[in-house]
Length: 211
Image 1 (cartoon, one colour):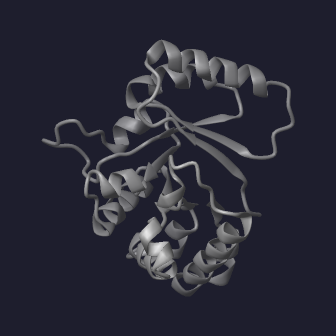
Image 2: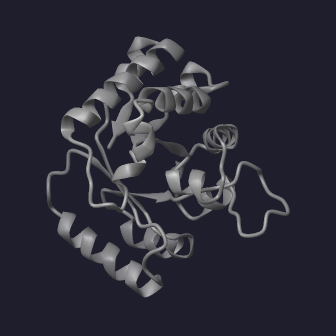
């Protein structure tokens, strides 16, 4: 059965006390409610451990916003999958458009992160999406296909079925614009078609795809 996931990426927002207040408010708001979706939050790195202690025994799951592909090493400013596991993360966001465009992360590097996350029993939330120019030029599906194929490269079917896909059109991030339900559904259907060709139709049907 396909899992429903609502995920919130906090990006570079909230200091420690603000993060604690926000997650406390969220936990109180959700308490006692019949939640049919998995609620995932991705605070900044410095707040992960504190937030995890607050969401223990709640419906809220913890995600990191990024990680490195190496086990450890001389990578100043980076964090490893093992570090994320040690503070209680269950998910990690990989391939976000801001990581791709601002920090120059390639499809190949993102693929290596996906494999590292899976090796450490973290669930990758893999982002894909097109820019405004790409949508207006009619290359949305080419871009999405390229990103999805790169993300799944070298994965076994058993690994592939653990991924969560997040479609995030770059032109709708922080611009006040949103993709219509029809636009999002069209891309979601295309993503499932690509994944079915890379794995099986059963796996494609079972994967969670977010917008």
